[in-house]
Amino acid sequence: MHDPAFRQALQRYLDGTAERAELKLLTKQLLKLLVAKAPGHAVEVRIPPYGAVQCIEGPRHTRGTPGAVIEMPPELWIDLAVGRITWADARTSGKLRASGERTDLSGLLPLVPE
Image 1 (cartoon, rainbow, N blue to C red):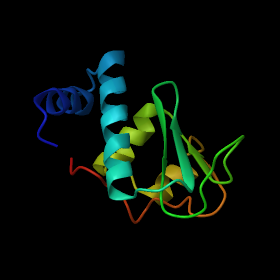
Image 2 (cartoon, rainbow, N blue to C red; image 1 turned 90 degrees about the vertical axis):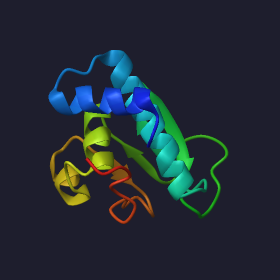
Image 3 (cartoon, one colour; image 1 turned 90 degrees about the horizontal axis):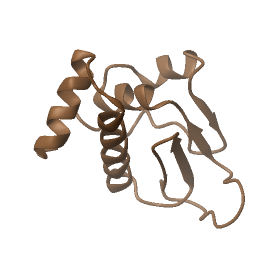
Image 4 (cartoon, rainbow, N blue to C red; image 1 turned 60 degrees about the vertical axis):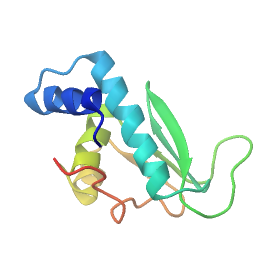
């Protein structure tokens, strides 16, 4: 990602000095990258309180709770997206909830090298 605001927010995050607005920016931008890499509507990825997207090809979800949902805190999402933690380690951390088919993002991550 070449956006200077994103790079600055990422550097502050990696330094441990990111604030709420920077977590929001990073979360939203990294979710956009995920959708660009894996377009579709089969899986909903939720990063409360900052965002949620549908991605990955497969059956389209239109009403109610999707059949495939991934949810995690922003810090874990950012760590996954930049490669600071593996999908397997995130799953065993207890902070990531994933249910349904196609909810293994390991083949799509990292989105941005650290």
